[in-house]
Image (cartoon, rainbow, N blue to C red; front, side):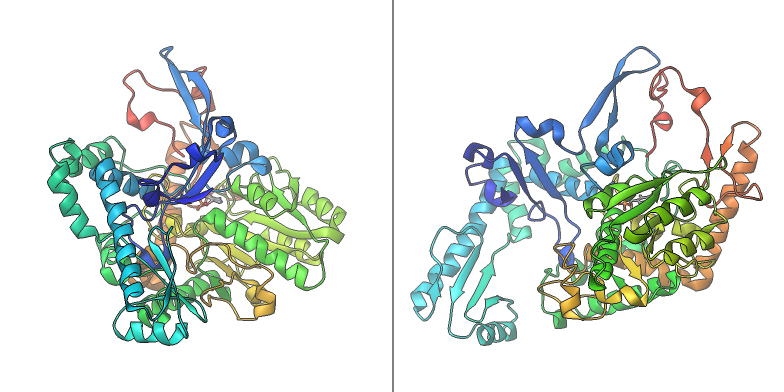
Length: 567
Ligand SMILES: *Cc1c(COP(=O)(O)O)cnc(C)c1O
């Protein structure tokens, strides 16, 4: 069952109606519109399906003091453990947004939320009643919650007239407009505060602020320490980059606001898209995917659409090296592809003779290769040109997982390496804060021949070359035309302020720092995987297996946060 959280505060819950699985968006819970996102979705199930859900705790372990511990939550690692059998393809959970929605609920409390829901419904009711009294149009009767449909002679002329009075109505079809009512935040904060603050301590702004601050102080943030967080190496969330996110011109635009009311956004999309194309040496882009994993899905679907348009319906084999990030096989499986794994050689690089054999064996049905550069072993593999050539010679397309772009920006590029499509995890590469599991953006870039197949949108024309009949092949991959648009000012500001020289310098310094650290540490710890010159890319892997103490994680008796497992 698909539902709306705010409406559920006053309706009978789906569980009581006999629903097994319920999904929806948490945006109505205090999260700004942001021209479509970011916002958290939710999925809940009845008891019977609990163990099949992504993100569940999978095991119990014992720490070095003999205490029982839960050893892993699957959410972030499911793709790695189950690969093509994973039930979630995304490591970028919208944790920060989920926290926002949760705090909105904590602040207002059950009664406050009900009051907001009732006032939303009351506004919609007053709107319907007012129109009914006028008697010139046909108004939808109950039941409705926050959205009222109105039948009229000419929907477009009514919407135009309303727009001149600074009101946006949705044109549903030629003879129908609709209007939805949202809570008027400020007033509700105030009313909720006056009658709730005596009941529960978190219903005043100060108490809530202290509570949130207490919770965040239990984490290990960048202001206290370096965060050894996988690919997310550039994490300067400077104030200048974060501030535009709070500006009403960005934060309060509705996802389907008319384009002429969002010219600033549109200009930024184009500028940012072009900058990202320059950085990657690609021709066209889509800002729709909300995370790297969603970018992989979109990119593979673009490749699929390309093959289908050429009549190659049978091309469905996706070659993926075993060293790949777990989202690669998980997404290929979601796209209905058959996955062929290719091993690595003694040095951890892709085994090229094995790749050649696998490619030739599947020559007739080859769809794509998914490859990461520098590899997930953090090495600039020497064989990239040869690898891409083998795939192209056999009719396949090369999908480059662009996560490690931090080690390429200004120095080389996926386009130069001859990939056909790649995603960029803007939250890993271009400064969007990680938020304990993110708000993400994973836009994709493609070479010219793939541009017509980029994601489209039924309501708004999005990126790529508009060739409607071909665009139909892929359709839409996110509800919002430009994904989590509100996050884009962060990356745009970063790229614009750094400039091409600054970005290149940042790549060089990241690589230099990683190599300096690797050299200093290699006397004491084994460094796994190095390139031909004994160098690494912007990161490196230290082998700590011999320090393991008979349990999954070594947890010190004093439970120092620095020893907690990193993602
Ligand atoms: C993080 C990561 C992904 C997935 O990206 P998300 O934005 O977390 O969905 C894919 N590939 C690699 C190599 C990664 O590190």
